[in-house]
Image 1 (cartoon, helix red, strand yellow):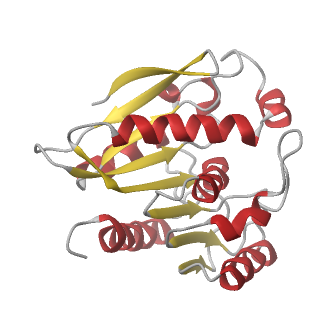
Image 2: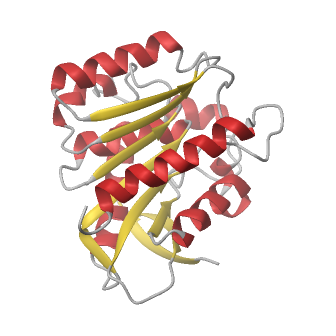
Length: 242
């Protein structure tokens, strides 16, 4: 189960869905950046994001999922939200979510990471580029990282030098956004910037290979392997005494 807290971002109300683990804590925390296809109409409609957040909470993390599409009416077309998406607004959303987590008594502010899938994979990269207090970044098949989004904003890849935490990436080699060549560019950028990172690539998987509500994309073998690896990465970077 989850509960919802509402925060104000530039006078726009943003719902944050909170998932809490058992025990008093303090627990490590995760900002989970949603994917766009279903979630743009509300996190409550997004089975994949809800179950993913529950699974991280079951593994001991306080999880906060911000509704980053609060800037538009829920009924607005997805293409409008894609075209008008702004990194500067999203950075404010992410910071507000981080601050909400960090202020909780059951969360250790020194052990907060960010995870995202698809559109959220790009958002998780963006978060790591703007918040030096994040202790881990995980991106699943995030596209458009080499593109700018919004007025007077650089391509997100150009901000790689600001990343201050280890990064883990998970990608399908049959994906076209990001393509294997795009992933090579991300890998090279992180290496050049001296950012500790590990990438996992799956030959038999395409985009959204963890998205179990979409059978034509879901790849159980790759998804299960990625779950094992992401939990191990987060245990190493966010759990105490690591």
